[in-house]
Length: 271
Image (cartoon, rainbow, N blue to C red; front, side):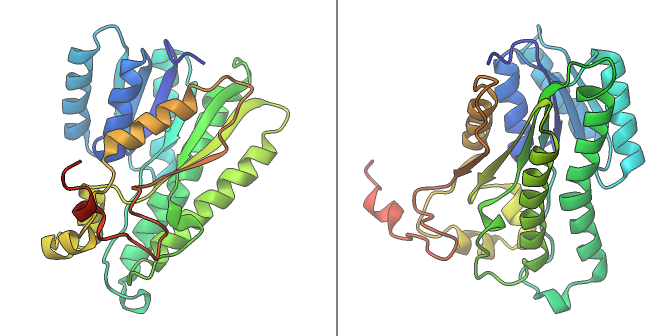
């Protein structure tokens, strides 16, 4: 299915996987609605994207996905400006305060993760379905792609991530349930599960501790956001009759959540 002229709304668009997806979709001729909390970052990204892809329509809406009123207003405004939303990429997410164990987490961190990682996905889907894909004037079709994680089904033995991993499991349950509920429509509901991806997310996860970050990545090469974005575009580009219901995309060295091949770089240093 061609993405040319499709309107895609991305949450968590200002950096990492969200930003990479924005560029990958624009390269396919899609029009974009960029959503994140930082208006400054979105404005800068919108300019870069528009300069690189002048034929695409690219707008941004600053909103905290954990605030339903803000999300709904952003979606309504986007539909008013661009006329439709064909694709929702639920990507906004965060993990906080690792490696603190669950009982030592501040409740504020638990609430923030739940609001972003769980409510944010539900709020964005609710607003897009009602304002766009299933609105009386819409065609009853579209695609919702939830960026979940391989940790949704297999929690790794890293301390301090009980809330995050529970959030990812909830995202998977929501994805599967929503797909069933939307039987009778032409809305596809899909999941993309990245493994370890280099960058801001994992640095934030360990509180900016560069030593902890390097130790986590020791011996293997993680994915980069652009590789995840290519997978997202492939999933979204499948013919309408095909649903890639869930796709795991991981570094080859990540054999499972419990087993990392930390000799990978050593064996492939001349590759």
